[in-house]
Amino acid sequence: LRDLPYPHPADGSARVFARAGRMIGRLVGTLVRKQPPELLLDVGGVGYELEAPMTTFYDLPALGQEVTLFTHMVVRDDAHLLFGFTELRQRDLFRALLKVSGVGPRVGLAILSGLTTENLVTCITVGDVAQLTRIPGIGRKTAERLIVDLRDRLESSVDGEPPLPGDTATPEQDAISGLVALGYRSGDAARAVRESDTHGGSVEEMIRGALQQLSGGHG
Image (cartoon, rainbow, N blue to C red):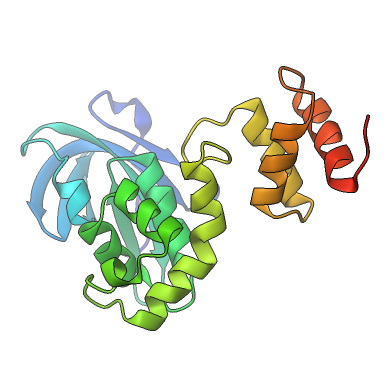
C-alpha cells in the first residue's frame, strides 16, 4: 500500500484511529474479504489490505460484519504494509518479535500462526527450542535467539509481574518496570518488590523500598 488515506472518523459506519504521524494503530470497519494471509477491510469506503496470522483469522467474524483490528505498519521504499491482529496483546508481541535479529514480518506472522500467544510465551520461558523449530522458517539458531532475547520479558509476564504489552499493569508491575528502566534485571526487580514492605503503597514508595533491598539496606 502507498500513501494510505485516512477516512474521516465521523462517517458513522467505520472509524480509523491513527497513532502519531502516519502510523495506523487500529482499524474498525467491515470485513470484505479474507484469504489467508490477506484480508480486506472497508473503512469508510476505503479498502485496506492487511496481512494477518492464522490465529487472527480464526477469530474473524463472517464477511460483511464489523471487526476491530489492531495494526502494525511497516514502511518500505516500495510499499506501506499493514499487519492486523484481533488482540492488542498479540499485535504488541508481534512488535517484540520484530526486534529480534533475523525476524522480519513474514517470520513473525509464521510464529504467531503456528503458536497462540500463550503457547509462544511458554515456549520462550521454558526454552522449548524443539517446538519453535517446528514453525516454518525457524531454524535452531533463530529459535535460540528468540529465547535469549525475549525470555526475561515473557517469563516475568507468566509469573504475573511485568505484563506483556497490551496487558493492564498493576502498581507492583509499574514499580518493576521502573526498576528495569533503571538497569536492573526483571527477575531481580520483581524479587526486590516482593521482599520490600511497601505493598499497597504508591509506585514511588515501592521503587524506593525495592532499591533499599537491592542495595542491601533495611529501611
